[in-house]
Image (cartoon, rainbow, N blue to C red; front, side, top):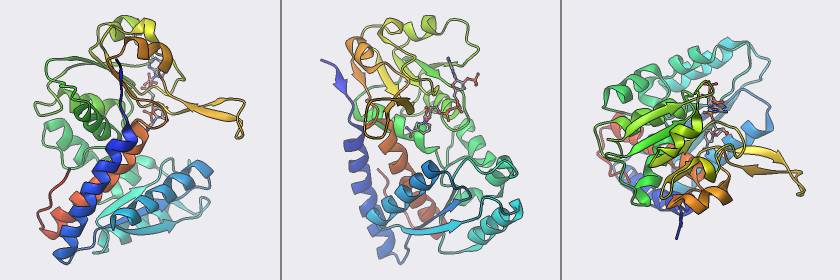
Length: 297
Ligand code: NDP
């Protein structure tokens, strides 16, 4: 029997626990606040931001939303970030990516106060993660770690293959899996578009985390029996549906399921976890800033 890992249910459990962490903060006189900043008129980005705001509301986090005209000079965004850095009611800041081309996205990440960096992308937080004492783990790989734990997949001593080396998923994922810590201690191989023989790598893996952004590129033929498959990919492909498309992962679910002992679906796998872990980072940031010890899931 293959365990279909229900990311929605795991995320719901985490959100419920976070709600009581928020309660504890409020008892101490602190309302955690998350600021989302949107400098884009891309409908997908708008949707992501409004979902994040709704998530905040559900667990009792104060959502603050700042919108900047995508044609405005970059300085407007930097000024808005400075203001949020100084705002005592804001504990976490997230700038929705991508930002317009005339804005330097690396400068944006550096502009956010690292102690308010809810995404965990500031170089200081990246460094802390790599050095083995993470402050804010990036949401998607952190969510994957939680999913593995929820499915009782012990990563220690396992061969893990991460497909993708982006700064937001692949690299931090590999860094978490290799840490000498719970949810780590794996032997990690990072694959990317220049990997010579991807299938040879994935076939050797006990755990495959797919984050390439290529629809259904990993199929059952590329996997060994009993593997755990975490599919981070979210890809729109044309389909005969009302919207004219459907969402598929980087893994061909049907054939991979035949080989896997555990696998995440798309949608309903990693996606809900990413959202939950953003709330986690916000609650953690509020606890650190206000000197309140909060229990985290
Ligand atoms: P990027 O495009 O930034 O990175 C993709 C990575 O995959 C790159 O390192 C690239 O290699 C590698 N890659 C591309 N094609 C291949 C291939 N044929 N074989 C091996 N490696 C390949 O994407 P992201 O990391 O931002 O996102 C990856 C996927 O995860 C996307 O589908 C995205 O939508 C999804 N996603 C889902 C989230 C969720 O919450 N569920 C959150 C974030 C992302 P190279 O470096 O050589 O170009």
